[in-house]
Amino acid sequence: MFNIQKSSFLNKIVVMILAVIFLLPIFYAISTSFKTMGEVYTYPITVLPRIFSIEGYMYVFQNLNFLRIIYNTLYVSTFATVITVMITTMGGYAIAKGLFKYRKAIGNLMIMTTFIPIGITLVGVFIIVKDMNLLNNLWGLILPMVFSPTGTFIAIQYMHSIPDEIIESAKIDGANEWQIFSKIIFPLSYPLLATLTIFSFTWRWGDFILPLVTISQGNLYTVQLGLSYVEGNFLLSWNTIMAYALLSLALPLILFFLFQKLFMSGITAGSVKG
Amino acid sequence: MRVNNDTLLNNNLSYQNKKKRFNIISSRFIFLIPSLVFLIAFTIIPIIMIGVISFFSWALINPMKFIGIENFINMFKDANFWTTLIVTFKFELLTVPLTFVISLILALLLYKQDRFSLVMRGFFYWPYTAPAVVSGTLMAWLFSTNTGLINYFLIKIGLSPVSWLQGSFTALLTLSFAQVWGLAGFMMVIFIVGLHEIPQELNESASLDGATKLQIFRYITLPLLRGSSTIVLVLTISYSWNNFTLMYIMTTGGPGYATTITSLYVYQLAFTQFRIGYAAAVSVITVVISIVIALVSMKVLKWEA
Image 1 (cartoon, each protein chain N blue to C red):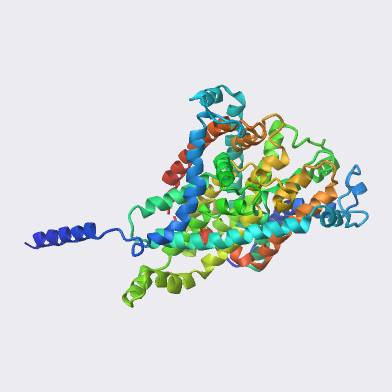
Image 2: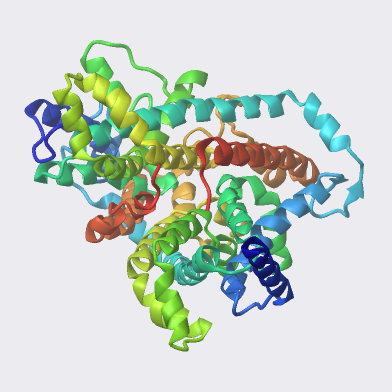
């Protein structure tokens, strides 16, 4: 707690042990995904594959409609993210810099819905999606998820950090409300936009509960729904299941390594002081 | 006279404020409308619908039949409902403190800005980007009784294998491990941000005054981490609150109802048994509890917009 520069040797050992524990699930998944079907079920198990095989991966691409499923998931995640970033940035701005009554109360109501996840309102959301004729439709997965309480919370905190004076002086210079937002606030919000984009994309990529109840046609499956189906299918071998799981994890992982700094910048926490 | 003048001025101002009518554009309310539309359409209206449907008997295909509070009476007599409620709270009680402690330990180990810490943070963070279906699948395989790596190690060191996902308590424990594994790295970052905000001079002067490391942690670090702690608690509570994905994948709520949280029960009632009205009644109770938890969090933790 005294010098910020160097970790002690003991620290490093403890960290390494913890890191090994944290890596066990993915290590075993990778190892299993490269085994042959026969080796997966040998007892006692093999830690590393004796015979290196990609039959699990081959099966995923040849028999499980995987590319179509990835396309569906990309479609949902991309459109949902675009809408989320737009409405959340505007919403955060309105709550933080708005001049109307009850804006704090409305803001609190919005972030309060963090505690009302889709699992709780599922029956109601299902009926609305059904009434909108969006069952078995990818937009039925997008529209109910685009409002994000956590995203709104981040946006409100970020907008609070922009000084009022900037807005006031723009107003004095004769800018109208739309110009203030698009020419001043929006360019100042690039860090927020980037954070919302990667978070929203990762969240939507991982959505499961809504597709589970609204999608029944195989060609509209998203990757998480596909994985749950594969995982529960007793006819499939675990090298295939692990290959499927790792492939569906690949995109979030690539995003994470590309934008590691952004993910871990702490923008989610930075503006919240005791 | 001066006082009078001021009062006059104030009255005049408030009079003008009242007269100035609400303008949707200049008040910037217009920017809130898209968020509000989605919030109302897909959160508020569903809650209202659940409330209405809870007074009906309905199986989706046949017409709805009004039955008053019968669903609620049945619910209070339904032992499974109470079990799921208890399981939901057990899961919170296991995951929230565990995530808090482990992420705080990780933050204390890795808050330094050297190369080692920066690289290692990634190793703990990436599970947060893994979707729950994926982490559930990986964990189910890791902890499987005959083919899992964990039991392989247990046998290697001379212990007997454990049927992790088949026992009531071990199943809940394994699920909690999966949840903590997914969240700890993310929460660690929030704590690290908090640690960096603590002025170094505070620690230094305290240690000059003869405070031990433990004292510094207890009386300086921990109190100054209040802001981060709030965020970590709120996010952990809400992440573990009624997201049934892990249970659906790893245990399907079993053995028996031992890992069925209330939202999974609602899912089963509505979408495998088609008792929509009854499922709605259970949802109503869950929504009420959620709102209470949210309000308490906001009050106690001072978590607000």
